[in-house]
Length: 413
Ligand SMILES: Cc1ncc(COP(=O)(O)O)c(C=O)c1O
Image (cartoon, rainbow, N blue to C red; front, side):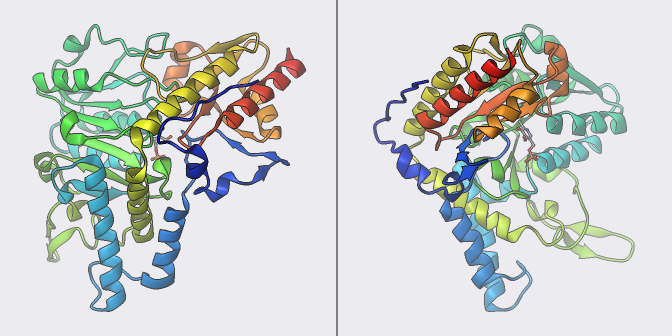
């Protein structure tokens, strides 16, 4: 197929691409078209260098050592916190808690609220489209606290049914919602939902795992109470992420885990807690990961975000056209507001079989339920084929996707 992506003014995709070593390889003997960015993104050289530099020069524990390396490690770790606060436009650096990733951040909040505001008579509101990471922690929190779990219904186009939002918000202590859907790409009207939730006296947590790599996120403009995300989905390392929280809500939350660093004083029978954010950072943290995440934040800030966004919008359009050009395919997720994710099924093959043909053609995509089993059940699907684009993808990647899909059609239809 001949998807032509026009170069956005001020956006040089080849220059971006050149910074990602892993993109320049063959897979199964073919040119690699990496279209599994919703699962994890590739890493720019700047992030790889930051990790290597830390381990080659500064490796030490943070906050506790009285020596030069410990000072440099601490400086790198805390500078990364500044970089995240800057990227999110947080009011202060103390509002950024390092976590293992989105899952960890959501569990931290859910476990804390289960000990405080969640109780019988109170509810948690999620949606049917949540990633399991933003559903199962709330199931646990509700089971432990006696609170009720409620959800917004998923509509066939991949958007959420907000018609009963006001009713569903009654007695809700927290609304926990994906900012962008990983499985269908839907972008939810979070500003409207946050306003309604606050008017009803509820807190709001956004699962930002998918949004961070695709648009600038301003937590103050969103007026969101918690924002959780993962480094590895925004060009940073795995095993590191961050949780933003408003100062007063973080202060009110009990510690998640006990151990070193999170304490102020320890006696045999009881302890007192360190200040936020350290209260939530028990044990030796993922120092290298944090430094790598800081480098990813700096890398993202060096991008022309509007031009990158326009480039991704073109990729979405081209990928949608490539998929729908093949007979018997059906898009899953056609909400008006969508990120660069194309999920689809075909009436001539199971998603896994299509995935296998794509793999042989060097096209890296994902098939299955995408950790959204309730959404797939609602849509009556075993799963989908998902191509998820990022800022470094090109028209060649989309052409390769289209060609591989045509091959699968020839073989199976
Ligand atoms: C929307 C969404 N939420 C949460 C997660 C979990 O992220 P992690 O596994 O990095 O904790 C993912 C990962 O796929 C996701 O896409």
